[in-house]
Length: 207
Image (cartoon, rainbow, N blue to C red; front, side):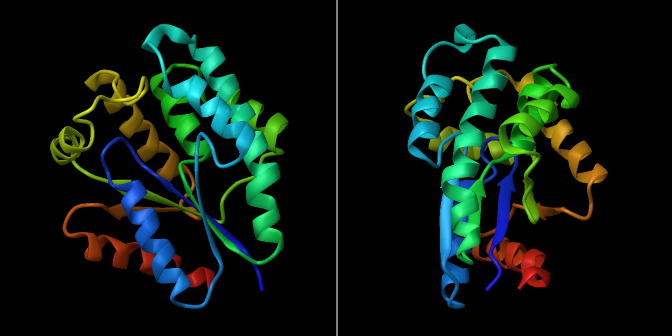
């Protein structure tokens, strides 16, 4: 059986984590082994780096240091979690992957895509998902969801300003348009069942 690697991407509040769980449940219903994971994180080493990245004040790291930490976490995650799961035929669903670094640190953070891709080439040998599902939602609807989700406070990246997150959204659109073979853009509005159905339709050709 051939394993598949699928990443879910998008800005804050689009519902990636919820939809990843629902998609995993649907795929398990088809008899597939599914590994649910996330970035930053997904392996013991990467989870340790996650705490460094998401806790503390926004100015804790420079943009360059932040990008290096993400690349280091991803390298461990790929080597210790993702590749072994794919090798045994599992489907791996990941909440964020390289494209988040390209959108957040490369785009909104101003480092540029070339620098982020170079780090990814060194750390993870350029490894990419079979399919990237980009969940898209209007800023107003995303903000409403975030108001509920983040009542206890955002992490240091999610709590950045509206201009930063607008830059993230624009960067994701540019990435999707540049790589239509890998990306599928998904309308994340409406009820959860409808969104899950759209996600399943977007990966049917991988079965």
